[in-house]
Amino acid sequence: MGFLKKDSDFSSGEHFSVVSAECYFQGTLSVQGSLRVDGTLEGSVDNARHVIVGTDGKIMGDVTAEIVVCGGAIEGNVCAEMLEVLAAASIKGDIRAKKMIVEEGGRIEGMCVIGGGEEEEKPAPNAAKEKEKNAK
View 1 (tube, rainbow, N blue to C red):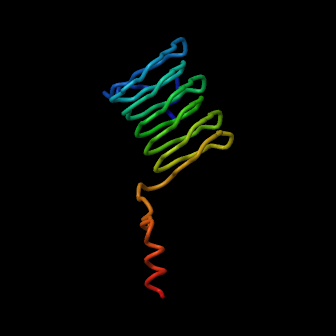
View 2 (view 1 turned 135 degrees about the vertical axis):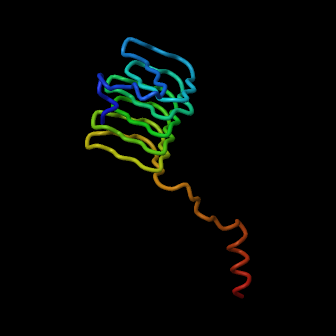
């Protein structure tokens, strides 16, 4: 994926924030554009368009974004429209995504809910009793 290349061209006009390999950040980031993490981020990432975790990057907190590409490590829950887990990646936490790609070797430890947002219609607690009553 082109996002993980060190020499990627980010001149598309989109705002891009970077936590570089030498950086350690602690706190919650609310990112309107995209975020690339090559260092360590201890805290949550909210409202991002793209979150890219480089092979040496680590996020210890929840991640909410449209697209998440993980090449490093995430220790927290991930909520995304699209999640890509690369071969060297590790995610420890629950995942909720509409689409997900996991390369061979990518590791996930947690519960995954993948697919559309439609909730299954659950019967009311007394519906079974009512149905049983009506059958008699």
